[in-house]
Length: 488
Length: 118
Image: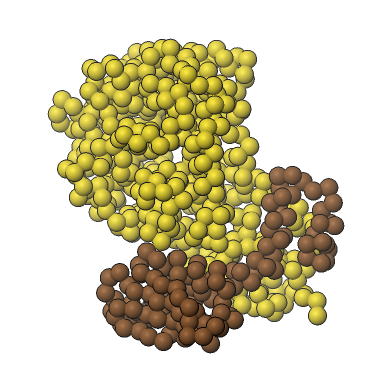
């Protein structure tokens, strides 16, 4: 007997609530009660029922011609994988390792602020720009990192000048971000950033006692007061939204997430990115292991609580996005490709972004550079002063990490229903587990993303109108009032 | 027949029917628990069964053991279902990915050839 409908490809798995999650190749999802899932598979659904129509609308089944559905799903799949088409758009340039701070968890293993051996030279800077502008990507973002990038500001200026000069012919969408702890900002530097249209990325771990616990000046003492003073100055010159911070969460900050969030609100930031600490560089030193090395389940538990708190704030009229959730929700709820280097398949490292060290060495991501700094040059791609663009970006390292970072074929990922929203990080796998493919059952990366994605999906399944309004406000970068259609 | 043949604080032993569960399903279910248990997959007492032993890395309470048993048994069922479904719509998945990056000139015919209907 002919089946009444054709099942289209999807992946499935149970959520913690017991409901069954179904996700198809386009990233569209449905959450079913287990009995409905069984009825779907046994071809027992009644055509025309609301469940049947939901499944049909999202292409989990079809009772009409199959080819148009395949065509539609192929188009959506291509859109979701759009990040592959553009190749490398984010170019991180480490202009110096010198820093005036000595943060206890510094990933970059910063160096003494007067030791100029750690500065990028003008010659290397020019070769970096040459490689960057050879990228086929139509949209290029150059991010200056350190140390503190402001300590080698002449090289920053050289790169900006050269990139803009080359872009007169290349005509790419070119933008610049400078990463700084803000403490070295001067009116002159700000005037230059304003003139050249450069935004600032910075770090804020929370209120003074939390921020100063690990973000300390080399001369002694915390950096919070200087940060606040220069934040005001930077906003005055560049504009309020041109300075955006990241928070690094150690174990001792987890009980104070609401205080940290309140601090972001008090300082009128539009968003917060709650991220756990990466165990690279100084973060691996013995002294603060109690603070830095903690089970990822502790972070996930605190993150969930914090996310609900942020949603509540939004509903009380305090607009604040949680940026990690926003990225994941965009993947779940929109058909678009979302570039997020840390969570792509194949990996974003080298494809979406790349890092140029102060001496011209090229690495697929910051973590690979940090590994090299710790003595392991496993992911070295080449050097801008010696190698061509093609040599660097088609290096055996790149081929290997792409080959081993497609979730479609990784053990533990290949049948995971979260696959379309998730990604692989072969460099982290190597750093934490000693091999590029990694071992999902004990992977912090997997545990964190699985738990947070499932939490978000359960919230979506609950379909609470107010929570959904907040999520859509985040995804579409609009106010809650706009989303609700009540503003003029 | 698939059943639990032994359960104590140190190990769970299952006899898995090879008729019901394929090797890939058993391996995938065991892999999923390999962060928590030391696992063994061995030939069963006869040709139609395989024996799986799970030894928790840390001692478990009776309730936790029951939960582990449940997770393994539902795990192999899920994994086998995935294999069964892949047989039903796996070729369509291939077609979608192929068509996404190198559009097929005769998609309708390709669908018919793949699943036997249009």
